[in-house]
Length: 359
Length: 168
Image (cartoon, rainbow over the protein chains, first blue to last red):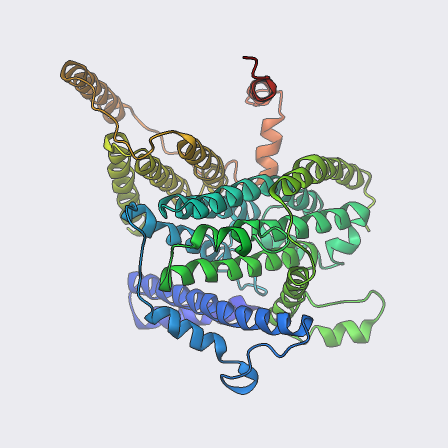
């Protein structure tokens, strides 16, 4: 197991030997900020090209193939185009609210990225209520979406925002109440690092019996809905709404919405990995000592991003497989099926934990 | 030092935006100023390392109540219209009342001998859960149950209102 806190500690000591403590703190703030912004931008670039390539794969076509080898620099070109575009807005908008909405949407995922453990000792903000913090900050993103739809002064944007708000607020319940709480019952902590460390004997998806599998399935469904992806993408249903709540945004402001959507998908996958699939812990098979020892040599972040990539592929697979649901079908699914199932599942999980049936 | 700077920044945000929230005549803007005030209050809790309270503040107020207010505001008619100002006498009396109230509050705050307390109690979730279900001394099971009964009553009331048929 590679301890990354030694590396970060060495950087801290090296900086401390050079300058006074207040300057060290400032520089470390800036460093961490730059690292996370870079990760944010890289994730956006990589996930967009990945999505387009996978879409091509599922539809028997090549996808982007002009810019760079296999079209790998297509998203870089797209980003440059977005940066250079003129910022236009509709008439009679409340300028302040119209301009502040993209920031709400983009700051929420950036704050969540700070609490996710990427490796042993590699968390920016190791907070004792990490999971609660994630739910709290993600609920602020909704405000940005509602605000964007309302302040655009466009009926299609407003309808998109209302749909999005309804879907996100209702699916947050199942996600927080059941899927995540069920695993908190097993791990006995809300700290994401503790949850990862509690899976050393085996991932919760396998050790938690049937309730953990039910919780995982519910989590994946609600996670897809939270990120407004197909089959829950009626908020930006192209055929009826244009582009939904961000129809009136252009240039870099549109890029903010677009980027945050993809980073939200990464966060949903990263949380699924952290909570159900052992986070950055290597893949172990009980009894296979040699195999397990050799797996330990692969560093934690590699495992983390590998597992996250698998879940992201799953979400993209959904996108090119399922048809879109109507708003009443979505709300029926949540309130009449997922919520009762997840509440019962929570009781079942509490019973399993109480009887000590976890192996 | 750093904590003090952060405290003053958050305090200024809270003061400015709560003033704007009550003086703004546009409904949506007032809601947003309220949201900024509530988020900055959550920041104060983060500053004293009470992360649980801060997260709950963000979930309940910033995420829940403000989203609800925004939905309500979106459904109101004439959302663009500015709110008419109340008449002069009401404004003068309200101003006097708030000045007296703030003088009393500030006097109490300045004269009260505050005791220093450690902030490492009630940090972990298990401690909070045990205190909520503790019926011994210093336990919170009675208020907890009372709040849940209140919540149940409001839930039933909401269902009754929503199910009511419109009989003309």
